[in-house]
Image (tube, rainbow, N blue to C red; front, side):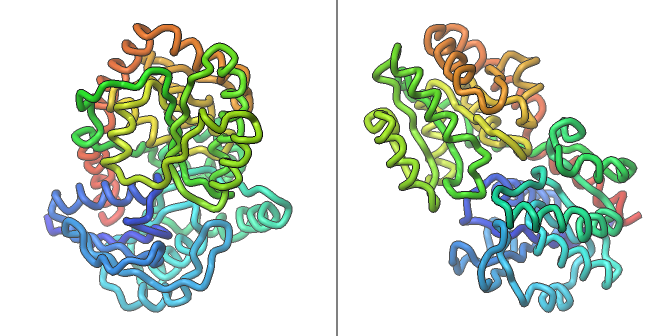
Length: 378
């Protein structure tokens, strides 16, 4: 069996930090171990001269700006036409990158795979209008053209409110494969936990407002009535960081919310070990929720909303608490429940680690995707 040349086109790649970026990195790393040649073509954001990481070739393109979180790289079509590869594996929701990658690959008669990490939705009149037009035009064409579709959220038929009806017409080529976690990096490290400490991890920009941080602040306002010394550690950078910091101060939470800035994977793992609970209060378009896996791998309980792809598994395996979206009161009650019941929190953390080891190692995820590659090229 000959090795395949895999080309992946995320909008951005390491050292950019985000769920999709890390998913592409870990998948590529495992594919390299399996003997495949893997190359990444992406926008040069943040600017980096890194051209190879653990055998993964990286080509970074200049971009002129961003539309709805997608870098516009005008030389992408030219680079794809010149590139030698067997399979194009692109990633949504970044339409420009994904659409161009699939169109060019089809012209070259190459096999195409798309991983859909989130539902498609935009906030604000103009972005939402563009999104609606795109879904009813180019997205429909992409779904017809692409050879295989991977969706990371196992509940997509219920949770993807904007794209589920379009996707249902292509169930014959849809595979549900979640993202994974590096449980050698994310593991209990013996660090003593800081009592009454919550952790929230996200990019703090307008696109990621769907992570529900505003609702977490509202819940914190309720919690401090009984837990005045509660601390919320916030990992992430973005254009809204100052806004959130000012909002926290205005709400009387200035001493309770600590903004730590951007952290790498090793640092995030350390904070997962310090914290009592990780919170993911997403309000819409959430995909899988990799940050939940990372926390569970470190044996800490999680609290998330029912839209998150992991919600069903978390609830069924008693790894944390699932609440309704946009419900600050329910979120506060869930947090208080775990803070008052350390034995329950400990048990949930242990359940989470066992579940992660059983189902979500990247080696297992890569093996599943490898089978899809070979099915596509048959």
